Image 1 (cartoon, rainbow, N blue to C red):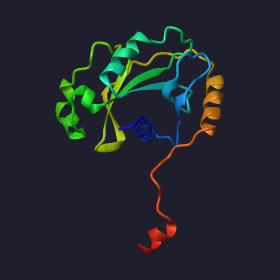
Image 2: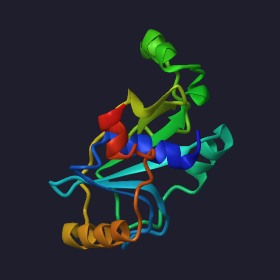
Image 3: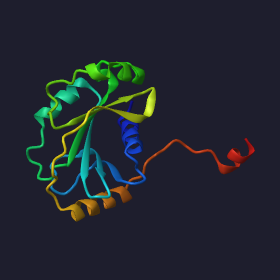
Length: 167
């Protein structure tokens, strides 16, 4: 799966129509880019870090965000199922209680798995621990709204309405 496909899966799973969800965004108070940032109607900021290879996933702990003043309320690592030794989403359900999460993943971070055979879903391997995000909610909301205005989500092409009516 490409990063864009994983971003779409996150947007779909976490209801892009009721939350502000922006891919690849720098927010005020952050030294690093968020792969996907989500702002809930209540003002809680969630961060999703996409990891497509094990080396990228391991490197995440080395660049941990010690310089960031803006800390998300919930942080997730979104990984391909193959990094957790799962071949398909049915495999996830059969092995759900025995999935080994690598030691380099902080215990406060959640882990989500994505699968190519189920492209618009994420599967929760571990829930994140919630923390109180200490940030200016209005400033973050404004920055995300501006960033969202500069981007748009590319969904599958929809058929023309005439095609729907006439088969």
